[in-house]
Image (cartoon, rainbow, N blue to C red):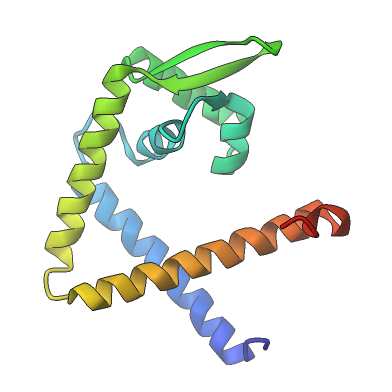
Length: 158
């Protein structure tokens, strides 16, 4: 069943409002750290496993030059390592260094503590319901975005 226009408009408003609030909270919470919000996002994706830089750029929704600068910054700080892809010498594989694994663990621990503090008036059930709803929303948007860009032949495999 399709969403009513008013419901869809309200959801769009709330998504953008949530993005704004999350950016403000992140900026205030991580001010003065050696990795800003953007670099922390890159670390998170790199932490999911070694992958090509081009694949990371696609997943992050950024251009190759932007990602290249972020990877260079993280490499300079000792958080990531790069190596040539053995299957394609022109491509690079990016992975977390041991220091990067520890940095990502600390970032995620700090974020968890911050969220626990900010949502101290929430019940466990409220938080679990919100997590399920956000997960469902994210999965639906990803699937719809893939379908819109992949065309009818590839979308049948989703």
